[in-house]
Amino acid sequence: MLLVFFISAVLHEVAVTVPLKFSSRFPWSFFSMMIQVPMIFFSQFLQNNFGDRWGNIIFWVSFCVVGQPICLLNYYYDWMHAN
Image: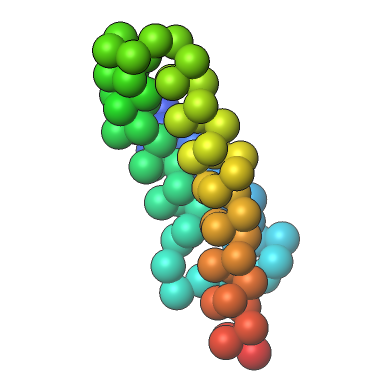
């Protein structure tokens, strides 16, 4: 599982930086993919102890509501300060 997430994280970072022709100070896309590994275990813990709904809530909040917008804002911030 860790290897799959690592390869995916590297490819996501390439997919962001190559088209933009920009290398960020910090690999935000890579980090956001790798942080999902511990989130899987945290989500499973919540599901087992508090019900299926909490695993789903953690996924949607961390992935769609918070994760991607913050990642994009960090790339934008780095791009603005690089130019």
